[in-house]
Length: 301
Figure 1 (tube, rainbow, N blue to C red):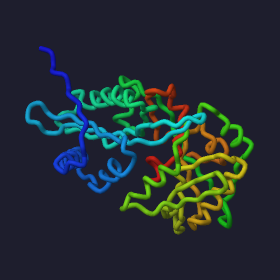
Figure 2 (cartoon, helix red, strand yellow):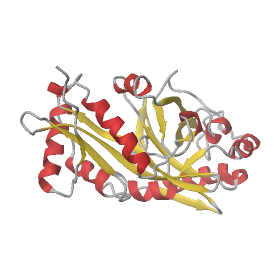
Figure 3 (spheres, rainbow, N blue to C red):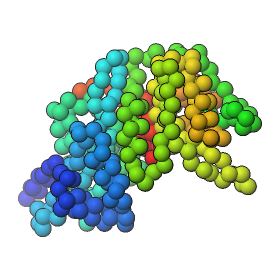
Figure 4 (cartoon, rainbow, N blue to C red):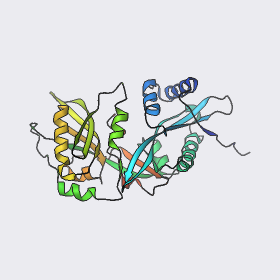
């Protein structure tokens, strides 16, 4: 006997009962989940953000959800909307029954019809092979980069090759996120530290400061989560001024290994492999290697 097809539908989190069902599913799947964070991620950004879910045909309970947060992206003067896959949760009793794949495949068709550019995300070790396997996403490894020793903090090895930066910034196929829009979205996360941002001519960067202990030292680290490069020759100065404004000792950037900032900065990988970036094209023909995801979409907050 053939299995009944899995029915996927849009969930309206403005409906309190739906919101409570989604939050309860997140708690059941992960043990705990901040309801305020759920609201901030799914309801405080662009109106195109959407959440898909699946209800059990047996008892009508919510058994799976996946959110897609809308972000502005730019390529060669054209603006589109990319959808960040997140807020994924499946009832443990329904894992392995195709619920997650059904939601993602439904989203591909629905978001393409809505005019979306592409879907992207940061999978974990369990979902990553599913995304890049049967779901057809491409993968780009993300390198962890330290831009250190700036200003009066005497750490050796700081340097940015602006010639490399200028050359790589000319890559017309490179997709960049709207960093200002992302910073505004992040600043609405009430439980998180205030966004530090700075404009310099037509360049822009933002981030937040976190404190880390290295032996007896307490280091203030500025995690740079977003940037726009329009005058690459002055972008290194922007990073220095942003660090000074934040009162940080070290600047930390997380960016794919092919991007302008990665190639321009003196880099030190913390690990051989780090968070991956996955991409599935909708109306834009892109792969993960085309997408510059140094925007703080996940890393900064």
